Amino acid sequence: MADVIESFLNRLHHPALAGIDLSLDRMHRFLSMLGSPHKRLPPVIHVAGTNGKGSLIAYLQAIFEAAGYKVHRYISPHLVHFRERIVLAGREIENPQLESILKHVSALLPSQPATFFEATTAAAFLAFADAKADILLMETGMGGRLDATNVIEKPLLTAITPISFDHMEYLGNSISAIAAEKAGILRGGIYCIVGKQPDEAEKVIEEKATALGTPLYRYGKEWQIENAVYHSPKRTLTLAPSLAGRHQFDNAATAAACIDCLPQFAIKDEHIAQGLTKATWPARLQRLTRGGYIELLPKGVELWLDGGHNPQGGEVLGAWMKERNLPVYLICGMIKGKDATAYLKHLAPHITEFYAIAIPGELQTRKAQEVEEAAKSIGIPAVSSPSIENALQTVAGRAKTPAIVCICGSLYLAGKVLAAGNS
Image (cartoon, rainbow, N blue to C red; front, side):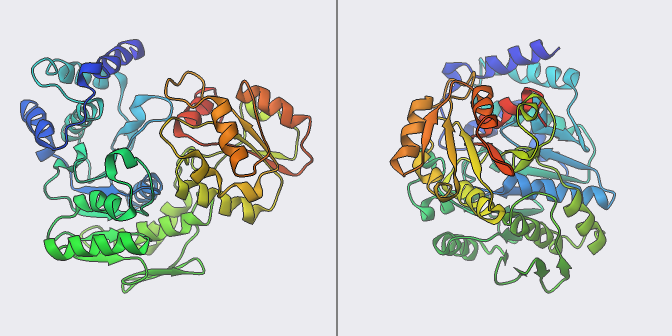
């Protein structure tokens, strides 16, 4: 069954279908041929941003489920297997249903070409339309304005998490340009929850909201967080997020702000608190406690996994390292197109040793030597290693406890780590 699904997914990656269409016209045509499933969805919370989208969705899912609601979820990319992208009423889509939907979608491609993300998003809409739920939490794939998910005409709510530099080849080379793309999910008369933003991003979002008549609910204005306490006109709530890193307090607060703007749901403070403490989201500062990798390290050496790959991702990881104040042994792999030095400069002051690797089995990986050179260019003592296992074995013979080993630099690398049985 899994091989059949992989065959369909590979078919969707056909080079002739790889071109990005700089409009939503193709997506609308494709969905029309499928019976317009995007018009038969549960109420949608549409989330854009550069960092924190997945964490926000994880918190919201846990909060809604704590209050007894059924939740659909759509995310990308996946870490280990494609089914992670499509969650139906709290459970990943089953293989037989996924195979049937992909077969249906694939049959349309000869007459209506679509990119991989367009086709798989259409498949997700089919699944969501045919399964009952109270809410659909939907993450943009990239950007917002022209993202395949942006065919939803009237979401229940939109949210924009912190904006940073990423995918500049498509979204623009300035924060303002990227923010304009992300703000494309705004709708007139529908609340947009705005997380902590650079000033230039917030200005663009506010201008777009004014033009559309979109009410905003903004960090630092309509709501705020101070000393782990969320304050808004609706509630005051002490936050205890389950995910590691101080930036998770901001993500948790953004989730609480979303709930403030959803009075039609019977969600109490205790549901928010419970959801925040129970949310899980792999490869976002995740401590690994079992598997073959942890067995290679001596007692007293912690093993962590993080999929951040852009400057803001590096900034939050560096802040966490500073707070932990332990020797850090970094194992880093990155894909082409990512600014390695912009990511690594935030980590540089906290690194004891750096091991550059190529991401195994990933065609778009940077060579280990390229990552090594990027690290050395900003003063990080770096060497290349042939594999994660080799780097861990080297660290095991050198590290003084207590210490931290962090595998980082790419969600693709994180997926390989998890697929190898580490968790």
